[in-house]
Length: 108
Image 1 (cartoon, helix red, strand yellow):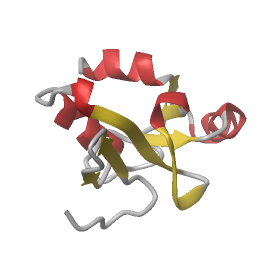
Image 2 (cartoon, one colour; image 1 turned 30 degrees about the vertical axis):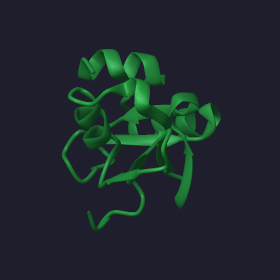
Image 3 (cartoon, one colour; image 1 turned 60 degrees about the vertical axis):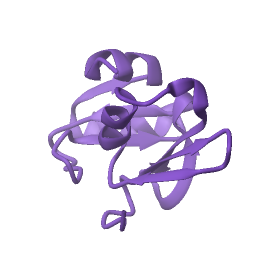
């Protein structure tokens, strides 16, 4: 897949080294609903404050804010630092999530 939006992109890396690329974290989450997650080594999302810098999605803080559009319409952005996410939340509104609470929201 060609990544169009370098701010919201995401990747999965399997234990065998295969890389799956996504335009947005929500696409990655939808993908894992039908994938054997025991084969996944890394979940990566682009850091919103540093486009094209991949971060460990399982340790990221996520913001869903209708003031920050994402490619697939979930308004979902990933942040390496919770403090950065809180700053954007204060300015743009929305709800913060951990990886676990995000998966629960999307029922992955």
